[in-house]
Amino acid sequence: MNRLACTFVLLTAFITPLKAFAAELPELKEAEFWRESVEHGVLPPIDQRLPENPIVVDLSAKGRVTGQQGGTLRTMITRSKDIRQMVVYGYARLMGYDENYQLMPDILEDVKVAEGRIFTFKLRKGHKWSDGNPFTSADFQYWWDHVANNEELAPSGPPAFLKLDGELPRVLFPDETTVLFIWSKPNPGFLPQLAQARPPFIYRPAHFLKQFHADFADPDELAQKIRKKKVRSWAALHNKRDNMYKFDNHRLPTLQPWIAADTGKESRRQFVRNPYYHRIDTNGIQLPYIDTVEMSIVGRGLVAAKTNAGEADLQARGLNFKDVPILKKGETEGQDYKVFLWPNGTSSQIAIYPNLNHADPKWRRLLRDRNFRRALSLGIDRRMINRALYFGLASEGNMTVLPPSPFFSEENLRNWAVYNPEKANQILDEMGFSERRSDGLRLLPNGRPMRIVVETAGEREEVGNALQIIADTWRDIGIGLIVRPLDRDILRQHVFSGQTMAAVWYGWDNGIPTSATSPEYLAPRAQEFFSWPKWGQYYQTGGSAGEEVDMPKPKRLMQLASDWEKAGTDDRRSAIWREMLQIHAEEMYGIGILAEAPQPVVVSNRLKNVPEKALWAWDPGAHFGIHRPDEFFFSDGEAH
Image (cartoon, rainbow, N blue to C red; front, side, top):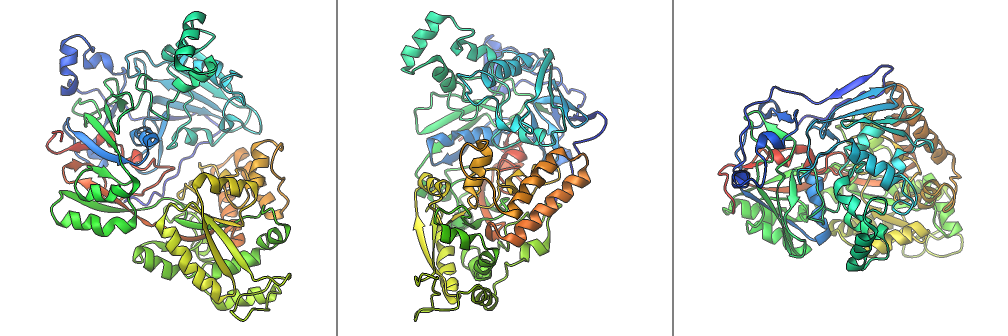
């Protein structure tokens, strides 16, 4: 796999076009799936369904082969709300990453950036929603004027990612294919935001949603709809219908490659190809190649067994490394699938977060001492955990960026992260915790044994196994470990309220940042980073909740995040990234254990164009999305 050493220079002093490759259109071929509908006049022919300038995908240039249409792709989810994975995997975005993690227009025909602050979007003329209605700048205007800036629909106003030092952009709609976002200063994080796994939908199908909006709908008809759906207001009704990411309203038009084909009340959900999708191959075949996707909702513990039995054509969610033996057994016993192992793209598969905002002032003081956090890290035998959990296939070290990132540093990875109980004991002795009980546990100043309660979501078996090993090695340095599994929502409540002493979670979602990636998740800007929930609350609420940052290095991280937003050059943004990563490596705010843990990906032998080697990454990457499942196809073109 390409090592992803990509650069994306966004800010320039001149207008920078970011334009998708435009090829001469090949002769268009009607999809067999829709041929009967076209012949009966239910759908217009293919040349009237595509934009004037669709994306022409040259699969050979990507090392792939041109496919054939047809078939049903089977996959499984464990919760009904996870049908939103169709939006994640579909990965139709205004801007999207290619397989080399370079940012390119997708739904947009092109983007021009002036002075790093003026963004001009050009829409594809003739582009249509999945119901055949035009997709134009009016859909952006509807969202901006009547959703984002409507107090009843959005009491907090437009989403926070559009605010730059508290400033919202001016948004203009000069014609039906042009939209402008204008800030007074550079906003380098804007375009990458649009390519996220969970995208911020800054447009809406206005023609559909207006029937639920008080500014447009007939009052009597709207009141009748409100009564029928048993909701309190028109805003509640509108929000219920406006669920672009949830993907659970089969009537809501979409731009994704597949559209919902049922009411969502069954345990097996169906999605069919979007007849108005904006991508074709060089043979004139409209993507996606696969006609239908079937998502079965099964119990969490059944995914591996059902995959082993050959009941999925493409499966990764619900599978863990511990499932590899049974999956490999099925592979060798003729279940007609392959098992790939993709490294995880998060910065750490397992990380411990000491809570610097812990409610108890004595423990807060101790957890804020970086020497204590360093001692905890030195007391973890990562090699043993790697061998026990992943047969040594993961990488060991600090929570930092992964080798594919241009900011990767071996020093940051190893700093205070190599097992050294002698050094850990020395640090703790020098901190004044030299007295121990007869069982070896160190004593706190109040005479009580030093025990750390680590709370987990209790969802991942590997976390429990890792903590058992850590409990043994921490005891060797005189620290007891108590593991407290909680429901995920309760865990978050405990962390956010300061009740949690330490918690276990993944590392940063994006382990492969470039200079165009906002580093704000390295600063105390969000309560979701479990080491500083109250600082994050303070930032997110503008000071109305939480606590103000009161430590020098976290303050520096806040300043650097702000500096990145104002930086005018790629070199300056890169320097900011490196300084922030170095601070994290020295301070150990999140104690990383392992990264790049292998994610089993099961692929039917009939399914083609799925990469054997890739990263299993949420953001950027959208798991399968960056590899464009609309380009996957069945070799026999037939459904199960």
